[in-house]
Length: 335
Image 1 (cartoon, rainbow, N blue to C red):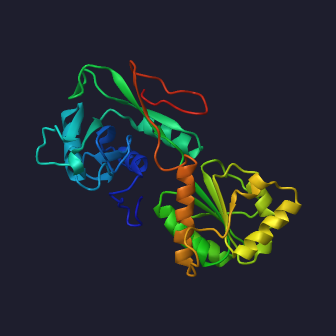
Image 2 (image 1 turned 180 degrees about the vertical axis):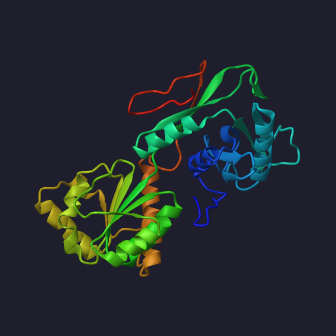
Image 3 (image 1 turned 90 degrees about the vertical axis):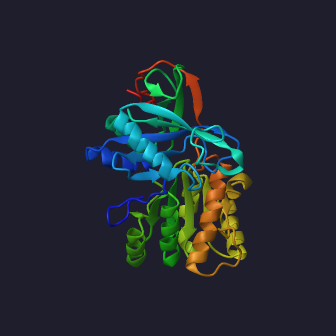
């Protein structure tokens, strides 16, 4: 993400944000996409880097083994004016760059992605829709890609969202950790001191009136010590599609919480959605330990629900250019 001084974290997943900013500054940018893996890889298919013509980059495609070489290759591709496909690891022409366990990966250096394409994708993500960027895998206009006109459909999903309801240090610490993990964070609190700390840590401050903005890419955490404040909020949380609902408190508090909801007519399956005490680490006492414990459970729930930070991709035969889709479930952007 972008630091307060205006620079960008190098090993981060804010690839679109970095690329859009650099393109708006009239810099040429290559989008580098991992399109094939042979053996093992610390990064999934579709992992990306964005590299500016200046050599600056954001993103990572390995455990740190090849990023500098990839950035140099991207700068060379930009200067040449041609896209290229390059293999690293086993069977690569770059014998001085090795990958663990004798594995190999193939990367596409796409210099033809436009600012308009990326802005369209970004807008859909901001509106909580998925989007697709069609990455060319070969063709006469690509060095090293062969003549086959196939596309790799790189799926982008909206950032995971964390809605925190609470007062005190835990919402603030949750914000810090969740933002670092790439979540959008909305903190709902009646306390101005909590709101100020969470805002400084990167959260948007929401009202206590409801669950606006909570979708199936969202987790909800209740971090009140006065658990009576949860009473009207828990039923609203159960009415959402959130992949995780967690609430702080002891086991006795959780039992009381569920008993109240059962009396209101909620069934077993609904009550099982509420994780309490929230968090994977028992007996955590400090706000930072609680936040780490809760976020670990949130990330685990996200992966179990298929809402993790990875995305599914597909390779297909296609001719291009392709026009962006107009349906509300996906957008294909190669104009």
